[in-house]
Image 1 (cartoon, rainbow, N blue to C red):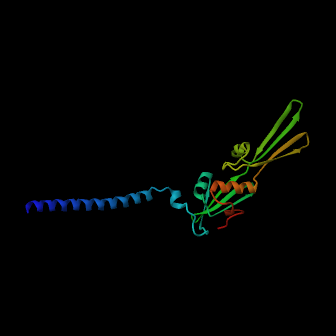
Image 2: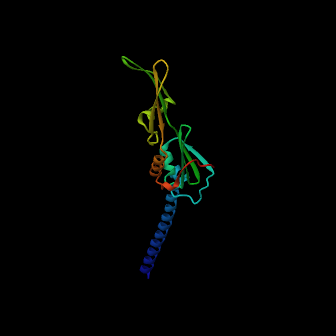
Image 3: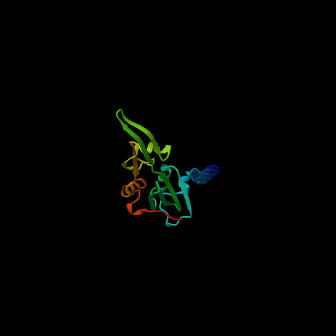
Length: 195
């Protein structure tokens, strides 16, 4: 009888230890879940990957970096783009927020004079100095390729102004945006989103 009692006490102690370990495991799982939620990136918290059920948005966020825009708007429900007033602008509804990205299209004028010794450049006029790399590359910082048109205008005194006009083809922009954002062409419109 003493031996059985000792055995039963040992089993009771083992059961107690197992129950305590199970409780600790549950608590650890809860703590790990909370820690993962706390360490989630702002993009994960503010802009979920799955499309929202409603199109309407109450907040507009203007982003300066294309990579951030694509990160937040990948798989967006609705995307609009416009090419107006020397700017390429894209807006998208994602996670109840309208995100906007805007980039200036460069404009470049070269004034020169032709002479016996060659060409003498008199002036270079660009809309902004920071746009020179985009003008030389032939694409915007976001990567969208620019169409280039060149026009020469003769001036009195033998000078010539060589205008390089950059433009964006709407069809190219729509296809490029669909690829960049991982959305169907039908989710992209040319125009603006009003909030």
